[in-house]
Amino acid sequence: MSVLYGIAAATASFLLTVLLAALLRGPALRLGLVDRRRQRPVPLVGGVAVALVTGLVAWAGDRSGVVPLGASTGRLLVAAAAVGALGLAADVWRLRRRWLLAGTAVAAACVVPYGETGPVAGALAVGWIALFTAAFRGLDHADGVAGTVGVVTAFGVGACAAVELMDGPAVLLLALAAALAGFLLHNRHPARIALGACGSLFTGFLLAGVAVFTRAGYEPGGGVGVLFALTAVAVADAVLVLLSRRLAGRSPLRGGPDHLAHRLRRLGLTAQGAVVVLGGAAFCAVLVGVLAHTGRVGGPAVWWVAGGALAGVLGLLRVRVYGPRRAAVARAPVVRGPVVRAPGVRAPVHRPREESQAPRGATGTPDTASFRGAIFPVRQARGSENEQVRAPLRVRNG
Image 1 (tube, rainbow, N blue to C red):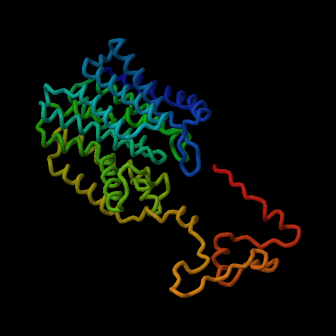
Image 2: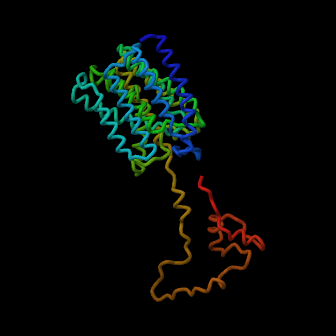
């Protein structure tokens, strides 16, 4: 691969993504294709820009003959585009996650090199690609996290591909890393655009697919360790979320503020600080994976990565993120009298409403004053203010 072409491809990917993401933001807002983060509407079309630019730059290199993708890499790019289109459909029509997982598994089954991996290892590779793609999608829950981890991972996996003299996958991930860097200009806190399911599934599928290509033909045990090191942050986030929801008795498919970045924010870090911590962790793990792939370090280094990820998961698992439901408190019924009466006791006689009302200006009986004051903390109206108090309260759901 020509160094000059690599620089040109990275520069073009960066600039085109910055421009295209800015152009797509307005139509996404008008169409309502947004997610809400702290009551801010964030368009979900950043992934469309990343996928289009990455595919365009890789196609240009292949058509020009400078860096041919090859048959296997071409199939991988087409399958990633199909998975990204499925993610875009999920952003628009809110498809169920099981359909996304099934579609990703079918696409992975079409690109795994069974001739080099064997049928058993190939089937395991299909499952791993599908699961990692879903795990990487979970990183797109906070500003800057998915883009930062994606850039670091793309550079690491691309370096492994370059070591194996796989120019097609290497230039493909170089274009992806540059596109994600351009996307980060719009996604840093406070984010003006997000990857969405389209971009996160496309990115995760490409990263996992090229990682499998680079480890095809190696010993399976060492391959598992290298793949884990290259993708440790996304895997740790998925394990933390599933384990915490299981322990809390929640559905694993039910969303919540229980990811890595959410828990780091609970510990007092800022949004930018959480991105720096997760990006640094991804860099350390990816560096170990690259060194293990090239034979510079042995298997124990990968075990250090696994131990660090396990310690992080267990430590952040102690951070409390699930609180009581506000709706249950707001809808608490008002107890107006005893529900169970002893036999033989006469029921209290209810007087007409006009006779039981308190004098004008009173805040209620002593038994209910504190409760009503907590639910309706407003000053009781007098005189001409009564009409305003009786008027219905309109709350705009924003």
